[in-house]
Image (cartoon, rainbow, N blue to C red; front, side, top):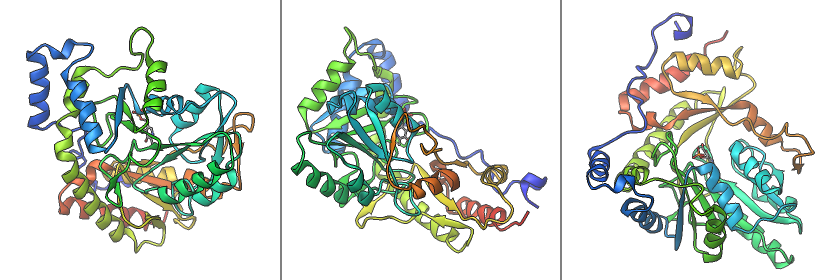
Length: 378
Ligand SMILES: Cc1ncc(COP(=O)(O)O)c(C=O)c1O
């Protein structure tokens, strides 16, 4: 019997705890407390973190801030996006990205995502660019890596024929540790955004950063944030918790990658779900969520019912983003049919990453629970 109908849950959800604290993190916090650095406005931990970010993301410049949400806005501000210009993003994306564009007074332009996927389509981008476009936000979402090379090629072509050069902003909030052709995600575009929120793969509870090779972008972002004091600061204790996480990130990324691949494979026999497919070769993804799309024929379950039933089985699972399709035309310009965004918005379910660090036995229980619930006709 399904747990939602009174049966026992398939998985004991207790192990899925995040964020984690290992000894190195505890030591860093305790050191910050005992040497007094925890109470400083600027100190060794934020300085160390900036260096670690530059090294790990092969970036010339890094700036810390208070969240990934503001990091995206700072990236756009740094890019010099002006009010009344257009900023392109996928019609399925993190809600704050739309708001960041609006906060500047620019106009969001929605572009479709790839078929059966979650990331900006390079083909659709080519159609949406205009002389008014000032920037494009490209997010890697749910373990799917955007086709950065294709997107860069489209922007390069466009920039040859316009006065206003389009800046590419990479939203790498979900993918620290991920790579494309061995080059870190977050290092591919003019400027990128990272999040250190409580659920993220690098976590300080809150926090974010921007990365760029361009000193002019960094300078503009800093000037915007500086109001006699840093308006979006990260404190020393947050930075102290983050510094040791760079030692464990590569191994954790690898384990999550292996386990996600296995999980996706073991669910692939189910007709009711469409699993993640990378659209680029050479991607080493980082998994913040593992996504599936529900096919229409999922018997008798609505998405919210299915999610409730999976949660009852003990799985940390939820719905994807709502997407921007319903945003009024007064607030944005929509290009093309956005049919893939509609599918992503209405049919995505996502499994939260802590599961991916569990032992093989637990992962089997997770796969079995998904099989059991999805194939159970209502
Ligand atoms: C793709 C993406 N961008 C930006 C953010 C915002 O990060 P934060 O929660 O740190 O504000 C998130 C958070 O989930 C995200 O998934």
